[in-house]
Length: 276
Image 1 (cartoon, rainbow, N blue to C red):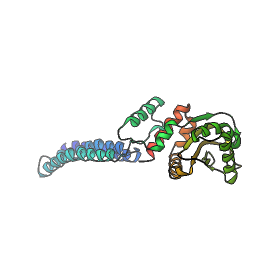
Image 2: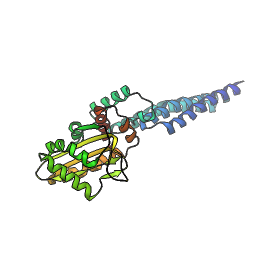
Image 3: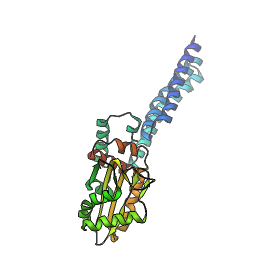
Image 4: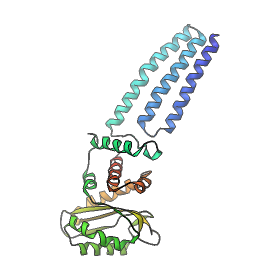
């Protein structure tokens, strides 16, 4: 009788451990994997050890199983806490789960607010620029030159330059080489005369912007402009933008963002993840 009961208890433990293995594969980040590994594995292993004790009886084997269970109960939570604390201190954040359809927009917004207010989120110059730069949500299909004429006054104001000069430089730069790097993504960029000036415009074009035959419907556009003394930050900005747009799920989130505020939140969230 004890043998049958022991086998049933061991089977329950094996099922818990199986769920733990599935969770380790399915969970997206270190924190949720730790939760799976700690809770499910601890319970599963304890059930197995209890089952061994029942199966063999309270003899030397059963006593060893009980000692092992005490050891597991002490070490598993302690190790998980140490790993989680180390991950948090290193700046590793909770992986975004909205892409997997597990969260609504309200919860997603609250998650971002929590991250943004965290002391661990130290903003750099690029983050501050994202917070203040114009974000435009444009309807209607148009060519890139028409777009440049439309946004030149705003970029010129940031750069302390003439709007006509900014427009001409953007068109000239585009004619030299197409700035659309992917079918949906472009980074037009120019250098202007002066000192200590740098600006960026972010544009979501729902109907697409024509840049070339290969890229007729670009909908994600970052326009950069600056003076020559900002060259280093200009390169850093290009690298940061490239990292952000290549993140998994970015383009889908970009396309479905409800308005300009949501677009900015998406950019700030992606910027925080690029440093992980």
